[in-house]
Length: 424
Image (cartoon, rainbow, N blue to C red):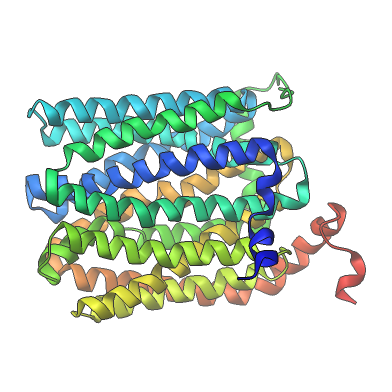
């Protein structure tokens, strides 16, 4: 075993605050993915409707699109640590309420819909504040890129472990225990957050109103071409590709004639691919070349969706969905890393809220579109169309790469991430 390589992959864990965050969040994310799988199976079991799967996904992600821009303004004005602590407590309350409804046997689809919207509002603040706060946890800034990649590895380790546990729990005991475990898992992240010793955060109280700051953030993100194109491709991938996760219960139950175990296998394979991509990025020591990887990764994601839609064999589909997860993670994390590296500090909250909008805010429309299309033309054709659109987007982004590189390199030089002579 290459211990030097392993040490390189986990180098950002030498930062105490990030190490605590990593431990607590890793436990919490396993619970989150247990709930995500159980939720999909619960909704489809209650309704037997692809449309309802899409509607629930639409409702839970919709707040990100409409509240997201204002969330970024608020994040830039507030103490990010306290805000993250609040989002974790509220997420735990949501899981507790669902658990009580399930254990008392009174759960209805409208309960799931309303609680999904509530969690969507919480996540609208949670994701960008989490992304903005990671940089504060890293004392040695050369470890930032590694920390961002490890963040993604953490999410996908949970994606791998959580669905496997959930599949076993649902099959043996039913969905309710999954939601209870998720509620308890939040204790870990809340406890580790309270153990951190972060430097005092300087909050600049601006006289300008929220709308003016929102307009300033939009103008900054749109006019700076690298941010604009990265967010546009991310939005396309999320709109046309991410609904694969919402539709997975249909593949498990109807296409492959399976049950919760099959659902768990599919989600687990997706997680293996995503985790592999995140570990690969964590092993890298430079941000150079990430733009090219965004284009290649989106191409892998789209091509994988096309092949997955054409496969009716479970073992072959498990291999294909692994590459789908790999492409998704490489594209998402590379985009995150470049944005975190080039954005101005005073606009970080707003830009990361735009990132959340592109990554999560378009998903509700994708879920609703995919659910509707699946009822009309079939789930496999829906995924096929999504894959084709993503491949086209990847090609367009590849043609824009020279212009993006030209604008990003001076920023890397000014931040001493690279030296000017590296391009000679």
